[in-house]
Length: 276
Length: 315
Image (cartoon, rainbow over all chains, first blue to last red; front, side, top):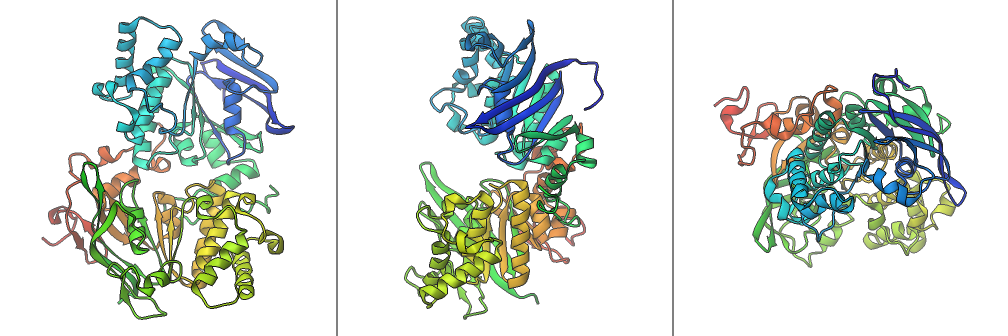
């Protein structure tokens, strides 16, 4: 783990496990997230990345472990909370999804989509809400005439901006990005990554950034957790993980990334030789 | 003179939509050197897959090839032109899956869920060659082993749903290669796979290509994959070819502003803590949507730019 910063923890996960029919999807995972940092979670499909973040947000119920979250009202333990108690906390933890096509309701206008969280949490009156939606739209760099249009009228990158606006309208502290830039073309991906970083600086957001693309993680994250078969096998700063990986599994992952330089040949390590 | 297996010239495809004609391809032209890997790179909607589908003549309505030629020079038969082939021309059947075969992005949709993998690979043989069932089954087993599927006596009788994504893609590759095609078209074959599995599949495609000596047309948006696999690179943007060159020319010394922007937007290459370059920030005020004819340069590369903007070009 990195040196403790001036910022304190926002989230502390201890011994978190989730089983499906007795098979561990996430097993004994522990880590802390510091306020205003970006923590990357990497691993292959099936390694438990998404299950982990969903168990933290209580989108699914974890079977074991403790999830402590520093809410505006102080520290709370999320794992045993009743659904009703969780509702006010949902304002402070939001999610940006992978697929900008599947995650927006095609029958709602952009205004309705971005405004909905405010209505659910009974924030402001109609005119205040519209003001907040307009403000958010500007933050994510969409034109104001987008408000009355439907998702189908937007490109993938623009839709992802709508999804980001919806996640941020309640001013959350913790934002979980689950493969949020994976479905985008590289030039659009660059715009969305830049936007996420700008918004983090402006609003002091803390990101849990789930991704399988290691070059994106290297660019955007401060620290990284490497997951394999439901467990965290290695964690460290981006520099530690990318330049001096300690675990064989991390080395296997890194060796499989094709370099954009044709003079750096792809020499993937062998899973079996590493005993994985 | 380099031996060219496929020569595309002036290829144009229109799609009829509610709001009029969309020009999916405009004057696309490039050569594929025989026995090499040619990559087409570009973003969604740039026309990469449409180009591949033209070569297989599988453009579906509302799409239509409205111009251009694709000259194909197979080793096993006389050269012919693909676009003008009649629907009943026997060479069209020979072309699809015989002389040229294709590997798609999503292996599960390329495989039938109700037939065993052995059955599906053997079927490809039976479609194109006059051999008996037993012989086809034997060759299917050999090909599946060659693409790295072990325990073949058991696995050949299994169904695609019993395989992982990477194993399914190996089956699709076996199906594509079992008739010894002269050109293998790979349309984003590793995009749906984990990076570790992608590395295995890329290594497999490269090894098989070295071994069998076929030509490969590799379609991808991933510059890392291009760098590792391609000999020659064709960059497409908005249905047009903007730059062609060797992999080193295009990736190490890009000329067209769009290519420069595409490369600069890759996160791995940018210094940490700084915003990533975007196409817009690299291109600046240059209007890259305006088409220019491809100009051939002395070093063999081609670029679609105003002549006066090409560094070192003789005006």
